[in-house]
Amino acid sequence: MKTNCNHPRHGLNSVIHSPVRLSIMAALASGGETDFHFLRDTIEVSDSLLSKHISTLESAEFVEVIKGYVGKRPCTWYTLTEKGSSAFRDYRRTLKQIVENETAD
Image 1 (tube, rainbow, N blue to C red):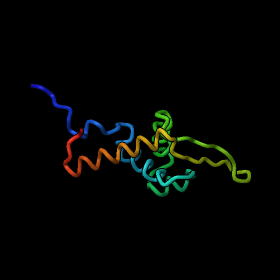
Image 2: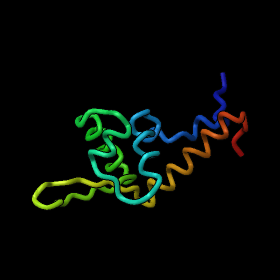
Image 3: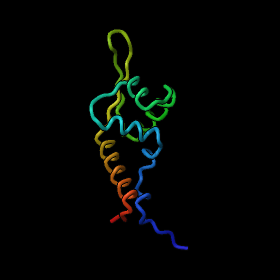
Image 4: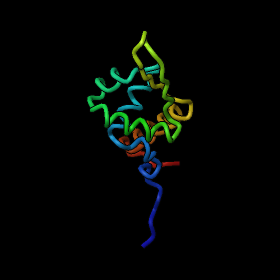
């Protein structure tokens, strides 16, 4: 049996496709830097789960991790890289094709 790879789902980025990573990407897509606590509370995950998924996105070069201090307290901020922004746009475009039953060109 021949496998057909024309369905748009084949174009979904597997790094982004996890619900938690998708939520992170969506939260960061608005632009600017987002701190760890705000991001964690926004997407409603534990510290360890956020850290795990951020590591995956950072390894894929989709998210930049910025460490610094606010006063004497350590703080971590996240921002989408250009590569991450592009990958997220492509991911949204592919989802749109799927939900609108369009075929890939």
